[in-house]
Length: 218
Figure (cartoon, rainbow, N blue to C red):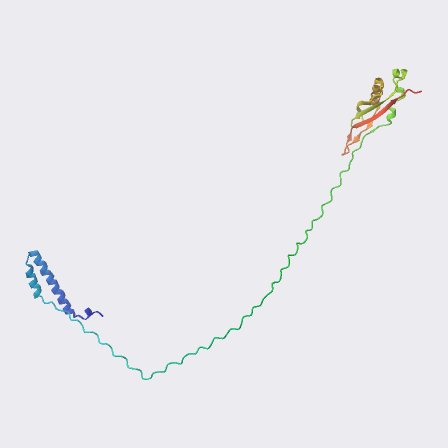
């Protein structure tokens, strides 16, 4: 607790009033040009009441000693901690991992059989009738017979899809132009063919080759 709290309230009021009067007189003196010595004399006449200091507080007496003093508690003996048993380590042998099983075989169905080949309906043409009758001894040129000229003429013809001959070529000459010319003339006029067939079975033309032997009858 501060000492100011024990001062008498009346003394405090008186001190405040005196300080106020002293301040007013000094201000008045300064304003009216009074002598500072006068102000000092007035200030000395003012009786300032000293504030009495309160006496120090009394110390409380010590507490009386207890009648019955309890003996101190016995010391606590901590039992020794039990020794843990030794830890045994079990060694586990690693078992080798078996290799992964091979994947099951993938069944691949057999490829479907190839479709049967389209039957080949193609066929070659053939002479219609007997080719030996296309030219006979009755067709022997008169001049060549008088001159007794003989020989064998080879020829090749082409025919269309109807079997009609469209061209004739001499492939080997008999040595006589009139006998060769008579050969193609007779073959073109008398020869006929059965047309051949393509792969689809449609009729088609073709070629034919043969020979005629010119020989004077005896």
